[in-house]
Length: 262
Ligand SMILES: Nc1ncnc2c1ncn2[C@@H]1O[C@H](COP(=O)(O)OP(=O)(O)O)[C@@H](O)[C@H]1O
Ligand SMILES: [Mg+2]
Image 1 (cartoon, helix red, strand yellow):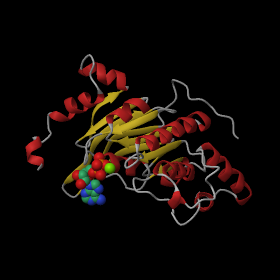
Image 2: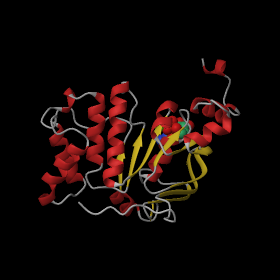
Image 3: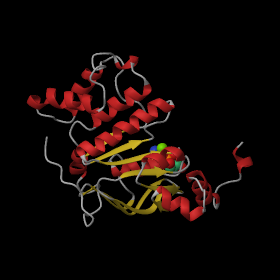
Image 4: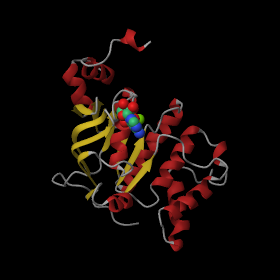
């Protein structure tokens, strides 16, 4: 395995958005958004439905071109050099993507071809990835027999076979029970420690963001409403405040009244 170079304080950001904007017709999904994510951070994008989290993540992963502004991911510009970005990132989409009819091992083998892992390295990389996500014993079972947490971990193993510098995950724990959530985050920590990846994920579970991330940005109306460590943000709202209180405070101003939602 290649030696890890640990990030240093003066290093450039691993992910940077500068006035990044995406329009869908009249809808301004991401609105001149700027933020910087440091190498090695576990960074959460939180915010209500429709805030622009998925659109932002799709621009970072080159799946959607920006309307204007700039995004630099792992040293490459998403608009000018999308191929370089794709080689340096992993992406776990919101919808489950592993094939339930195939075993965990077979899914990994497919991904190893997708990510152009040289044939001679495939068996070792697949075995390493399965071991890293705690799936060695389950590797020959069909994925449809896996728990939700195991299936997610398999997807993380698939999307990190090429040892990306950044792993993006869109709502990775939606639909998982508490045990499944916990194992996913335990293994994300392992991934971060072993391969030094920067991890960017979205969630609307505040308790989860609080427990898991180093820093977070609350996205609201396509902009960053507030950004910091969970402790910094809680302190801004008050003593004994939770991230739920932070969420309420920074999304209350423009939110429609609750009654209107019915
Ligand atoms: N492909 C699309 N076409 C039109 N509107 C879209 C599309 N994708 C997202 N939007 C709109 O952009 C806004 C942000 O959506 P999204 O990024 O999915 O938010 P989130 O992931 O935070 O729930 C919403 O108003 C949504 O309806
Ligand atoms: Mg979304």
